[in-house]
Image (cartoon, rainbow, N blue to C red; front, side):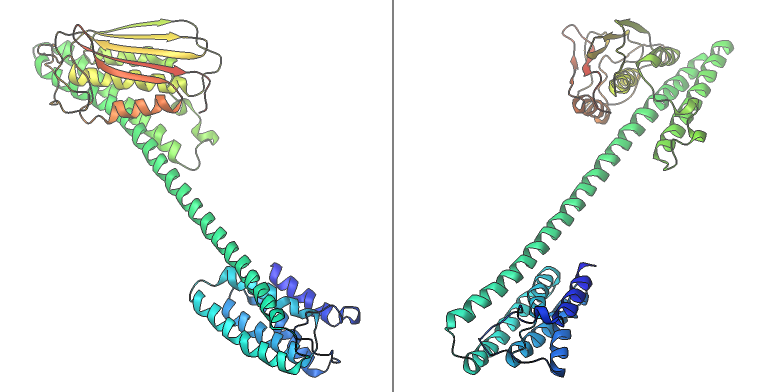
Length: 393
């Protein structure tokens, strides 16, 4: 919008008598009164400013033609300033054949300078060289503006790509945390049901537990889909299913794990801070992932969950007991779970793909905390996390 405005300003100002002696003068030719050709020269120098962004090369050619007529005829109008502005616009907008455009402009300047030198009082060649360098500077300013625009567009594209990648990773972590725990519990409970055919009451309890776990999985998935929905946060979506899990809901998670056949001891110390930011959710995810892996790789082994609330942090420790460890922390161990009654249970619980522990480690480190997972000296496996409270969400 600035180009058309400047073109109109220079067009009108060029016809104001007070500005007739303030135009661009090259070659020292004497001033000539305005005539019909003056109007053409002024229009050719001002009009390209309005269309320079769309047709930069054509605009530069027309402006150059008008400027040559202005100087050779000795009008020396204020519209001559439009030539420099057109050069800036062309330098900023020409995308293809930039070298050709610069070369043609430079070649066209030579005969103009020679003609003005012969028609005029014979000014030194340095005067024409200095004017040419001024025009080159105008083009350079436009080229710098173009480079700045391109760099900014590239930066925005890179930021958008990084944002999309980070969002996909976050969604993948949420899906892993939400789905894996419930599905693992259902698989373990379904396997246990094979051994309970002689006990109808226990079989009914196990199947009921599987059903409840499936319903919780559906509820959590619906909540996650609501988060991905652009309309999330509207009154229709802010019910009980929209609550984010936190340390305060750990007893429910512990009970679900116990129903899946995992003996879990839970202890909690301290008073939660008034504002914990994302630390609550991250602590919940650490415990959830550790218990999921315990179900998968240490089913039936005694598991302990300890949560300690400090003034500025939440500490979490989840461990299993055992005499030897059969799973590697990098996910290289064999999969599978123990028997339904705990016989042959595994004592390590690193995730088979490594994605779960890597995901919670990333969550903890984003908040500036510490995370560790590895075998216990006396057997078993332990996951520890220190999560600063009150950090950014």
